[in-house]
Image (cartoon, rainbow, N blue to C red; front, side):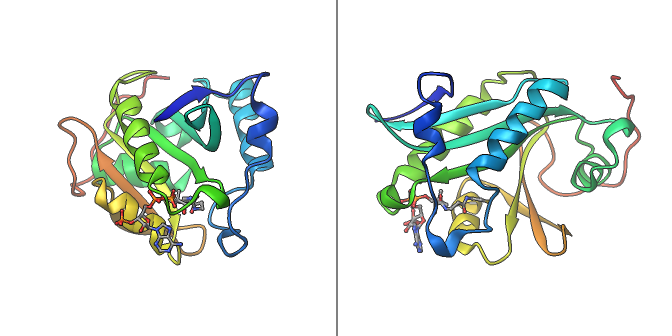
Length: 188
Ligand SMILES: CC(C)(COP(=O)(O)OP(=O)(O)OC[C@H]1O[C@@H](n2cnc3c(N)ncnc32)[C@H](O)[C@@H]1OP(=O)(O)O)[C@@H](O)C(=O)NCCC(=O)NCCS
């Protein structure tokens, strides 16, 4: 059975060893970069990172990094946030920031089972209500794109970082299609 558990001093060394396939390098940040992102978010972010190991029974087979943001003009320098804020009217979002299943465990249905647990977790609003979940996917990463699409993520039609897709899934009553730009009160 697949489960999500926090990454802490008992299991971080196992997470540190997880690796994607060679031909998947570049589809996501490295494990080291994800640890650095989680550390910086903890130190400087408004909300703690949700950095979770994916267990199959007692074995760690992957991990995910989820982040929660309230969108306002203060973080408008982040192009993808500005697109979500202006085109969809999102006020708060979960970023599905990183997701991987170790090379030796791929293709056995664990990615799909993990997606279900991750979405269930996000739908429980662990850090607050949000309008959507988004992620950034390389255009050539067709396996991941197909998986995300099957869970309701749609390409928002605008690219960032020189050709990466923003994929978004609305939460609750949030729109699934872009709407005209809205003005919002900023919580900060
Ligand atoms: C995306 C990823 C998490 C999927 O994990 P997984 O455990 O292999 O996924 P599953 O076994 O549950 O398979 C999910 C789907 O992908 C397909 N798939 C898995 N590996 C595949 C491969 N090498 N080639 C083609 N399709 C593949 C499966 O057939 C399945 O499709 P279906 O459910 O429509 O039949 C994994 O490939 C991975 O870690 N990739 C590298 C990191 C990455 O790309 N992360 C996403 C960044 S945006």
